[in-house]
Length: 66
Image (cartoon, rainbow, N blue to C red; front, top):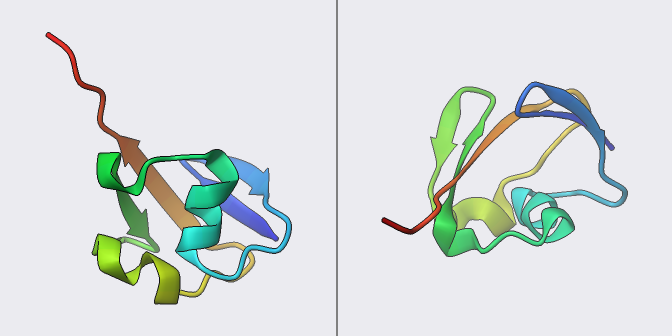
């Protein structure tokens, strides 16, 4: 599936939901926020939010430290 992720075209095989995208990148869902087609998606809905070719996804990853 071709998706626009953080402004870059990405091919993610077998992606059906946002959860599949999170898993593809090996991200910790507790450390990210996802915007899907201009809407912020609550973490508990990643597994039920479908993705389609050409969707625009922005992933913000929080980094701890000080």
